[in-house]
Length: 345
Image (cartoon, rainbow, N blue to C red; front, side, top):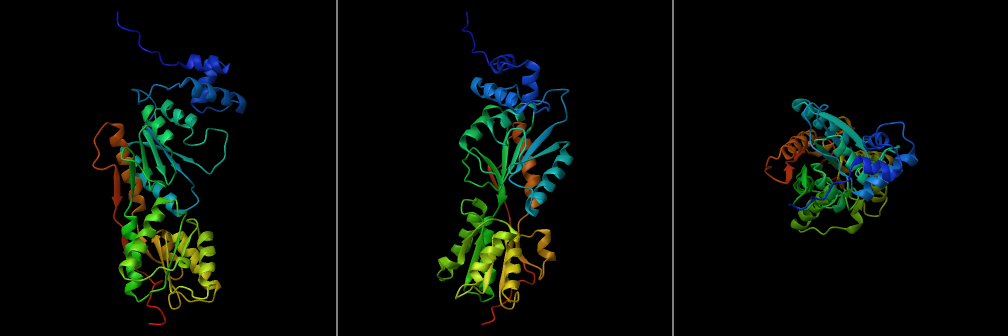
């Protein structure tokens, strides 16, 4: 007789281990309301200890197909534009889009926790799109073991060859921005970026450094700053840069949000843009063209990032081969009124 196959843990066993009814365990697994935090914790602990994995994959006659998109935050223009692309592509393919956010507190499982990942499998999600979120090898392994495809947009940390990502040519964009400032005659150029561990910002910095060194120009460490991709961080970094004894004649900001903070700092220091200070951003958000002065920036196709990510996720869910595990969309320099030759020229 053939050897008995190992049996998978059942929801009944989860319920028994947690001391609740099967109906209650099912409610926890599917994120239904009306469950106390203590009961929810016991069920989630039992799921984790038993290694319970719900049957995955869309079922005939089940609810509408859906994907979950996870953002670190929705407080910036970039995130909303990415979401616009995901929603538009979802509409084209008849897919519902569910949004979850890491920096929002609530009673349910934190996005990318084991309980949250199992919930995506239990709800028959086609997969998940992870936008500028940091992930671990353990999280990737659990997603794969439960059959939940994942696509990253602008991943925070380096990805292995088995992970699928969509981003822009950040290094090339850094080269474009720096070359533009050099061609205008600037030599003392500052870089204001995001966190050093944030991969897109790091790639833009490397493009900046490579272009400066290629031009035979030393890079003053005091002119390279890191913070966050926010207006407030740009304001703080520019305040430090402009208060120095040898301030820069130009600032390359790793995002438009940072660049807008630099513009505000320049005004606070009595500097005219671009006559006294040139500023260039990255993204080409809607705020770039309406700022005062309109912002020179590197355009990345943010909406298209969302579209491509969802299309790629559908290919993975359907078992189709994809052209590349790491897709990069081209950037373009957009020259407006915030850059000009330095006054000394």
